[in-house]
Image 1 (tube, rainbow, N blue to C red):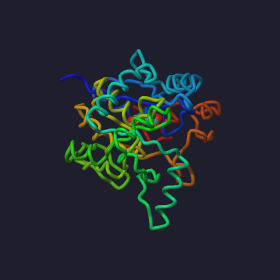
Image 2 (image 1 turned 60 degrees about the vertical axis):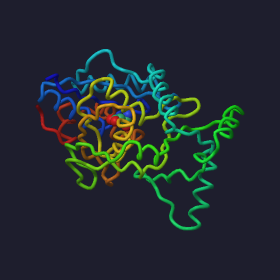
Image 3 (image 1 turned 135 degrees about the vertical axis):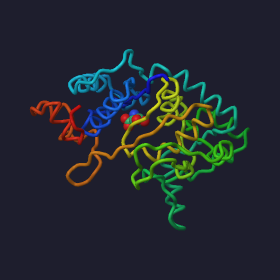
Length: 292
Ligand code: GLU
C-alpha cells in the first residue's frame, strides 16, 4: 500500500491565521501518525489578489511552526495550461457555457427576481446565477465572444448532474450540521458555478480537484467552511474521471464573537502572535491540538 498523502493548500492573498495553523498542523499530525506524506501547495490562480510577499510569509510562518513539507512546492499559477485543457474538455462535452452578464447585471437580475419572492442563495450566501446565457444559441454565443465581450464559463449544473448521476463522498470529519460518513453530494445548491473566466482559465473548484488527483492526495483535511464546496468537487471529479480522496473537515477557529477568522484580522495572524512572543507549542494548544 502506498503511504497516504496529505496536503495544506493556502492561497497567498493574506497572512496565515490561527485557522490555517489548525489545518496545517492537523494535516502534519495525521500524516505523521499514519506514515504518510505531507505536501504544501500554493493556490495562487487569482493574480489580482495573490502576492509574492504573502507566499514568502506562508513559508516562514509554517517553518516557524515546525512544519516540514516536500519539495518542490506546487504553485498553481505555473500550471494554467493543464487547467485550460480540462476546461476545453468540459466545453467540448457541452457542459460549460459562456455567461456574459457583468456583476452589476447579475445584481440587477437578482433584485428583479427578489421582487417576486426570495431568490435561492448558495451555502456561502451568494445568490445563485439568475441569468439566461445558457439558453443563447450557439451563433449568438459566438457573435458575443468574437465581439470581445468579457464572459465567465459556467457549469451547466443540470446537464452535469444528469451526466454524473448520484454522488457521495466519504467524510471522516464532519460538516457544520454534523454530517459524517457517506455524505450525499448536493452540487445543485451552488447553481451554475463559474469554472473559468475569459482571462483566467480556471477557478478554485477546478484547480483544486485536478491538483489533488495529480498529486495523489488521498486525504483532504481542511476547515468546515469548505464542506459544502466538496459537492462541486465531487461532481467535477466524476466529470473528469478523477479518483475522489477521503475528506476530513474540521471545525473552524472562531474569534471571541464567534465569527470566522479573516485574513485581514491582524490579532490572529501567526506572524503577529509570534512577534508578541507566543511559542509554536502555545499556538498548538491555542488551536486545540495537543503536542505530539
Ligand atoms: N486555497 C483554499 C483556501 O485557502 C483551500 C483549498 C482547500 O483546502 O481545498 O481557502
